Image (tube, rainbow, N blue to C red):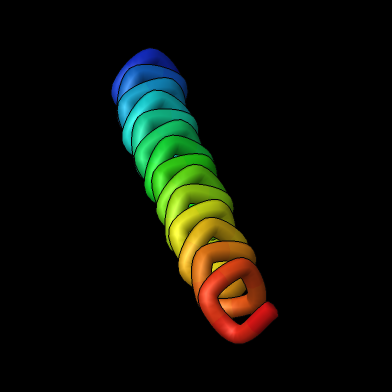
Amino acid sequence: MEADIITNLRCRLKEAEEERLKAAQYGLQLVESQNELQNQLDKCRNEMMTMTE
């Protein structure tokens, strides 16, 4: 009985760790996407400034 509880808890812990890792990876992807969009915006802004000068 106790062994079943321990096995169940270990399984739940592993699942929680996997979910946490997925969330962290998704968060990193969001940050990378935001940086890429910011770089594109900066490039466009610089091009517009050059055109208006």
